[in-house]
Image (cartoon, rainbow, N blue to C red; front, side, top):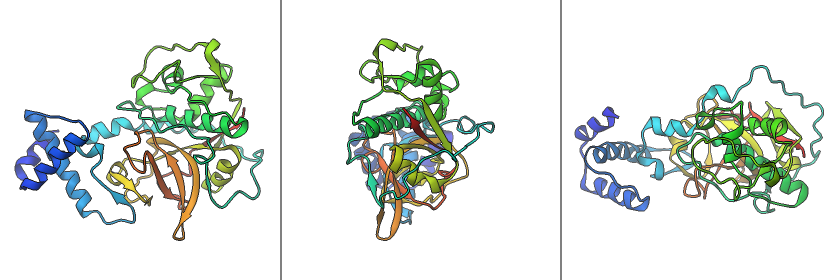
Length: 314
């Protein structure tokens, strides 16, 4: 943080830049004073100049993350080691995927996707991605869309690390092993934004998962989404261009080969000859395209092809 505080004194701050910061504070209901004001101003100006100088096929902007520190941003992401299990195998030979999936698909338009949620400052993306996947799979198979609880796996999944990260499959593993495959509703087990003790109540549980499939091949993702519904993926989201993303088809501008964020693919499409995935994030509807982003399809970027998990049995 000292870097950003000293940065303010070294930057030539123009009047309109500070006015932009004040306007941003009002827009997002963020108010700083004294040392923190200068700290946040320095971060904001750094990001403002990044946005101004950005040249890419998608758009970035000064969103709610425009004045957070790198460590605060990384806290939203998961521990990379939690996404990978070197002992878990992927046997896709028994998958029964649609042989001719539609060329375009959006499960939002078919009533299989709940509203975008906001995980807050807790690194619980894995729980949101896993829950969105079971919500979608259940809706596709049974025509019933329930808003399930992310707090349930956040508190109760024994193999995950709560706000310090996890993997979407751990949502299913815990439910199958400890909850008879069932989940509680968000209304009965609301999200807190931090890990608490487990309060699972089987008398209020519904839906059901009996089987999931881990896949390491983006080439199967279209078939998974078309056959089973919304599908969780893990990816690298550490780049500034993803942090500041506002719209367009994300092209992995500054991705690394690391898993640190979990999200849910809810469809796919094409725009001006460019194929893309439609992906649900868990940073609130203010981020990206009303809480979603599009990312290049079959480009094998940001490691999205190496940790895919779908619900294949209910």
